[in-house]
Length: 72
Image (cartoon, rainbow, N blue to C red; front, side):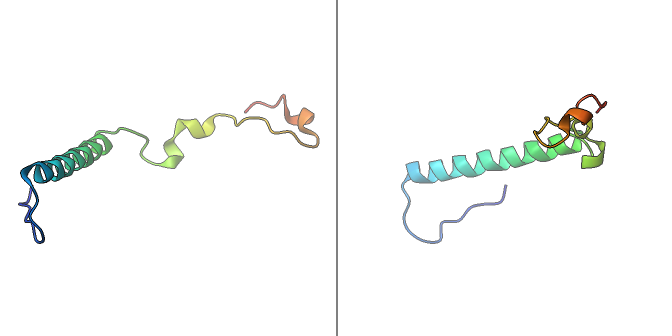
């Protein structure tokens, strides 16, 4: 991680520790998300997403009874 410089004000040690903890946790979360994306944490593209093949919830409308038995 790059060094952090205080440009304005005189933070107390507790305030500085709080800011550093937040910055480190955000950096760790971003790194974990990047590693999960590289490891194949999800579908490569929306076209490969199997959830798209699932049939949606039926919606009321005219002549819906005709299509209610169709395979999804």
